[in-house]
Amino acid sequence: MIRLGLCSGACITRDTTSVIATASAARLDAIEWAADAHIGVGDLKAAEDAMMATLTAGLTTASYATLYRAGIEDVGYSRFDALLKVASVIQAPAMRLYACGIGAIPDGKSMGEAKAIAFIASTLGRLGDRAARTGITLCLSMGRGTFLDCYDRAASMLKAVDHDFVRLAWEDLPGSKSGEATAALEGAGSFAGLVVARCAGRDGRPRSVAEDESAWRERIHAIRRAEIDPKMGSFVLLGALRPEGKAGDETLAADADTLRAIVAEAG
Image 1 (cartoon, rainbow, N blue to C red):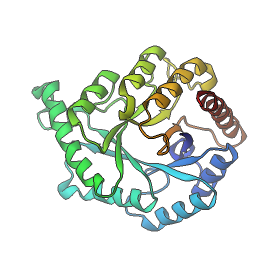
Image 2: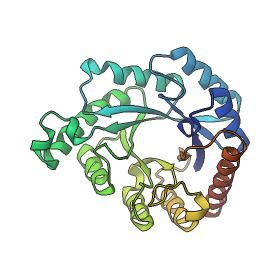
Image 3: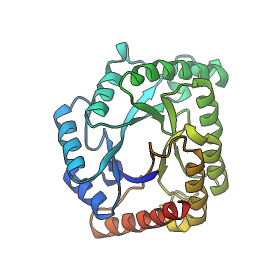
Image 4: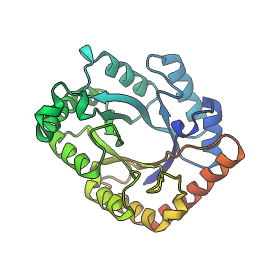
């Protein structure tokens, strides 16, 4: 079962109540709460309030999005554990994080890519062990300035980690060709724990899902084929930044409607 959700970070100017109202108005199923925008690390009261408000609105929590970077020193895993605690309170099945850039690794630039992958993979394995105790899956976000700045590196990292609780948060990277992005999702298969629809064109300009409808049709079918247990569900999260007010609501509703129709078509 594919469920559609909203990244609260896409509504960075809106408060928690407004984010929930926005997701409900677009008839979405879930919300991914962002640490930097709405539920900060250590704010367990805000986490509990958001969790209850989400459930009361008939929505579920898809994930907890953090800016944590695996590979950067975190003595005793104190920051990671604090973030994991918030994810647990909001009942998130997944927590998003990043792999640090190679420049952030001690002697990273001189060690070469293979050793850098091994270093970060080892760190992610230990983090995965900690997350497994709570039943929360870690999903590696992609993006510039991180080690996962291209699809080939993402595939190499997941292969090196090989951990049941470490997956990929796939997205359509700016500058990538549509077919390349789709092939990467198909190649990730069940290792794609989350799919984030940011819909940025090669020039970085925001695009609607409808502008790439044929590509998203292929992607939704790829997600469906990769589902190990359809009852567990897969999340596709709308993550493109939304302007305040009616314009933002309308673009979100249009993207949600397009994806909803494709999901229904996929069966």
